[in-house]
Image (cartoon, rainbow, N blue to C red; front, side, top):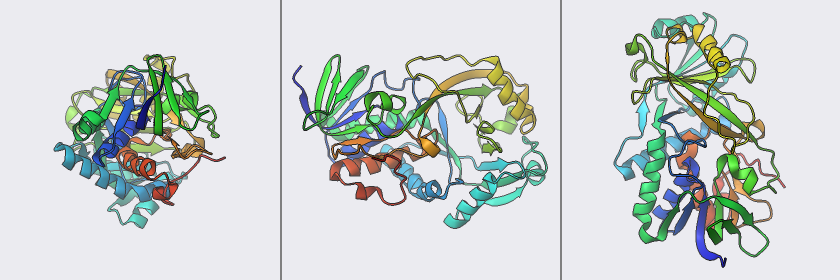
Length: 380
């Protein structure tokens, strides 16, 4: 099959790919966006009703990016004419002796973001849904909230089509089998596809390592499980009453997060940890042992949810780079292939900003537009 010439090719139409296509077309560039499944599928990392957005990061590198990320979402909302961010407030908490909450407070202080620190006992008096151990460390950020995740991805693809018109091509249910890097240009090869790209942007999430096996960074794909609870007293868990929450204990496995009831699905709670998996071995089941782990966390933190019925379950994939860093850079030795999207399970809130950065990176061909704030774990 003779390759078809294309200027910008984006592989993967999840949060990062949709944002990249949107920002390229907004700048008047032609884009071919290729997705192996249907748009909005549940096989990757970008589906689901909502994701948390917050300035509250323990790592100051990512915390410093959050003001720009909030601005990127505001700009998208203005362009789309639809709200995507819902302010709920957010609470970060950790047990006495762990340093997570104190590091979050330090980052917020450096940024000048409004917040309040308190003990678990003080927080319990602020929000009756919680029953934290009294000595827990707590940080509350009033501007944290949720993003309408699936809607945000769909909106950016809609806008890419609107901005680009006939110059925007969205190819769905089009698996890519390999990327040929032997010639002067990268060639994307599928069963019904052969595209020679001027610039190729790989935002394929859990499939990045399959498509770019020469990537000099080890990536782990993990299977995440999400539960939606139906509480007996829903008034305590609605937007406007229950904030988003993140808990980190003293071990990697002891990390949980949740958000208020949204779109009638129930209260979302999950553990930020999962076993390694093959992204092609799709398994939507969520077993009882995992449910018991989440219920155990809730019993000592939000007891009104601990025995509530589970309304819905979801699974998704994290693609984890060393140190849970982002991967965002040119493939070593190439100025025409950019690898992005393995964001280690905390990238959605940045995705609109990352799309902007990737568009500028692809158009300029220079990594200088990324700036020193971005972590660059791709190393030769």
